[in-house]
Image 1 (tube, helix red, strand yellow):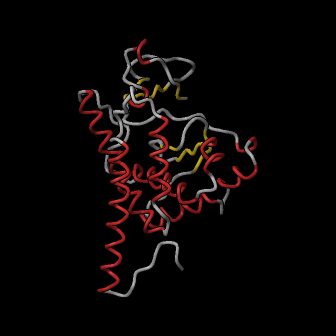
Image 2 (spheres, one colour):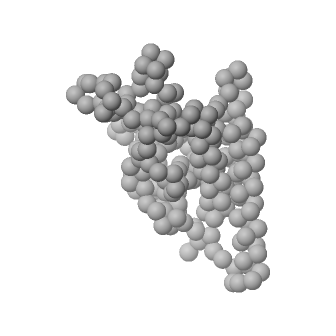
Image 3 (cartoon, helix red, strand yellow):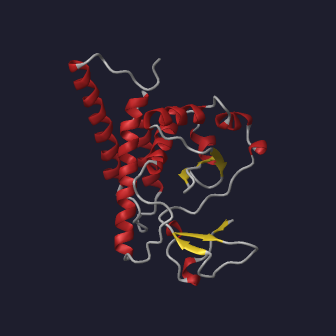
Amino acid sequence: MVDRIDSKMTRLPPLWMSRVVAGSGNIGNSEEIRKLLGEPIPRAADLNTLRPDIAAMFATGGVLQRIAKKLGLLTKRKHKKIIPAHNTIACVDDEETLYVGVEFLEKYGEDENLLAGILAHEWGHIISSLPKGVDWSHLTWDELYEMRRDEEAYADGFAGRALYLMGYKVESMMEFLKKLNRKRNPKLPSLKYHNTATRVAILQASFEAQERAFETAGKIFKAPKFINQS
């Protein structure tokens, strides 16, 4: 199982850098703790307790599975499964399992453009060349934060390109990031992401770059098809 623990009390790195792997109720020895470049795995939700419309999103043919299928066709890379979870927007673990937040879906589930952007961002982590499960203890905190920001920027860039290729709009994802930023405490800057203006610019630039590439290809060759076209 994976548990959250107080990083101040244990002198471990921040939660986004730590996953505590425990067995038989034991926590804390050197073999059970690994420092990883990722978020703590969220608590899974029981599909049987979800609202019917939310549960349907996870079903075969549901919106999340349809988006994941498009991303798989686009990258020739499949995820393992999509699991509903609590207290998260979305994340992916080292086994390439996608977790999507139930509370997030209850509020934004009708915006398929946004759902596609969120899943595409997480898919960017799946296809990232950054090695999984590595202990980064030899790096300084500044180096680790820089690596995390670069990884998130790559995922944003992939999301922008993928949204265009799947036939979605990028504006919903951009506005969602701005909304999150307005709710953020300005006294607590996030070190694991670039600032919101930079992230929005990356999304827009990558979307528009892919659009230009398609327009150029269309002038030279037969007009290419989007991934969701037959």
